Length: 399
Image (tube, rainbow, N blue to C red; front, side, top):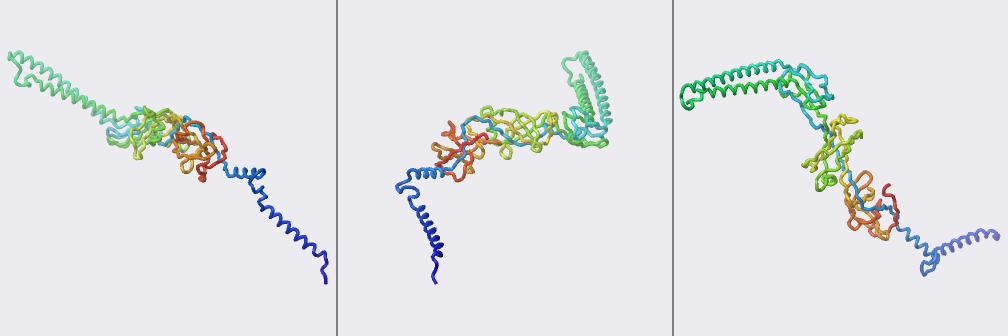
């Protein structure tokens, strides 16, 4: 039985397609596909140039020029009253009355009588001291008269010189009587002071923090009456490191300028304006020195600055010349700044930022880069190598 001719047609077509595929692959793999064997010319040279450009990575750069910048120094501290006093009784006695304003949280003026003690015994002591003083003054007058009479008698006696004993002219008796008068005067002054101390007064304009007595209670001398905070100002001690002091102090005068200070409550964000009051002249256990900042009339501020408030303190330091201002991302993990040289080659330099703020860090460039404008890489990568050729893409350094 013979095979019909039309059944060979599909087989022949399949063989023809396979032959065409093999020819196409051979042509693509031959050297002639990219141009003549002698080198890249014409269209082939353009493709080589595009391949060379593709291996130069794009890097974002910012243009920087050394300038003059003013750092801000920030620290933390607690608002403390100018004076904190545990008011104590100077004499003993039963508490007879209290001022209506003598309560915690109230403000009392200087001289306000906070508590009054029973003063009957002290009035009696004053009266007794006055009587003693009066008696001694009479005795002094009598002794003075007797002394004058003794002197006249001695002169009438016709004896020459002074008597053998000073008792004849009554000089010792007069001295003793004068001493008695002086002692009685001091005893009266002491009794009057004790009587005055039965009225316990605020020694300065004060905030009453706590009251430790009640009507009818008995106070011993030295017993606690109240805890008072002065209301004239609060002080904030801000511990600063040596590098922070270097940004604040004038190297010649040692003065801190400017004196204006901004304070913010850590928990609420409320703000106040303060002033530099003084600088400590000793180091604490952490080898830091404190700047003392003051806010006057804290309870009269809007809002009131309460003692005990924990504050963030911010003030401007002295201006510094010759610094680069860079985005924080420009500092690599290795503490280096990468920049571009002529021909768009990468180079790096290790830097130690002098200070920073919320948006920028400030570094002193090396001497060879201190002049002119330079291109600094804004986001350096760990894979960068010195001398690597890159394609710079300029970005806004102030963005």
